[in-house]
Length: 161
Image (tube, rainbow, N blue to C red):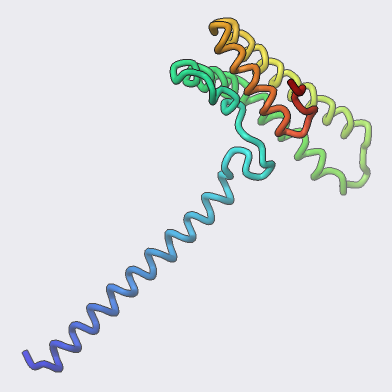
């Protein structure tokens, strides 16, 4: 093989490899962008922490138990939450429709709020039932975490000690 031929082959192989690498990087960046757009991280848009983070001061066993309770409650609430979002979306999309029926829109939004209250109530009850199983010091740690989490969500600040 002549030196120029070997150099030509090496350049072609190098170019193909570079093209493959650039394509792989571009493809990974595209997929990452799509995943972020379709599946935002919990709380990323609102700056809110997930509810299970209220148990960060619990023992590992109880922290895992809290995560499981929250996960199970959220799974049980999934259909109702989806229906509430669907109701809201339908109302917002129908605002431009003619003729606009404000009474129907208000009724559908009220139904969505009721579903939200039901899901929140079931989640709250699941947390209370879990807290009842904790020893007093763990329950106090969970209470502090919940108060801290509520304060970061913009409601009233925790009381000063």
